Image (cartoon, rainbow, N blue to C red; front, side, top):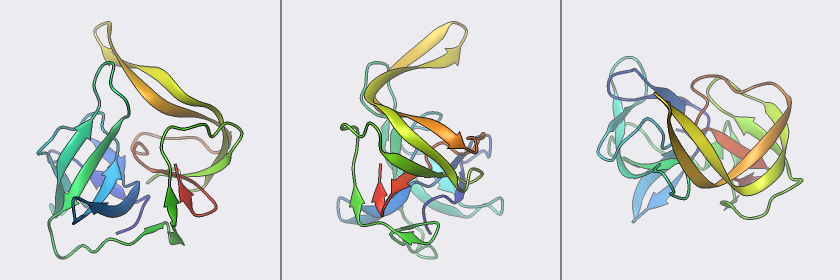
Length: 165
């Protein structure tokens, strides 16, 4: 398993991307988006119904910091790599100042989008429908210079020089 691959929720109603693999509380795990998902949700690898793991930490709440889920890999058929689309990752950073950093975005659809971080550690309002909004803090805004993100790219990796953002 590597960053950028396509994943599904248990009902196949939400599609998203794997960010990067690592360890969480000593277990093999990976990170993906938090919106549309909940703690305890099983995550599927393909339309064949293979469950790869379960969400053990979901962060997506009004006024919260971040939009991510940590998925514990509990299927021994899947072994994590520390790669994003075959590029090895050596470091990971979260919402600190990355303004001006050139990045490549690797989602399950958006394979090689390019862009630049134009603002770090910002609050973003998610439209939840019916005039309900969820404000999430601590995110980075990337101005894409090539390609565009598509539905299902949420949770994908944003990388530069073997560094995951």
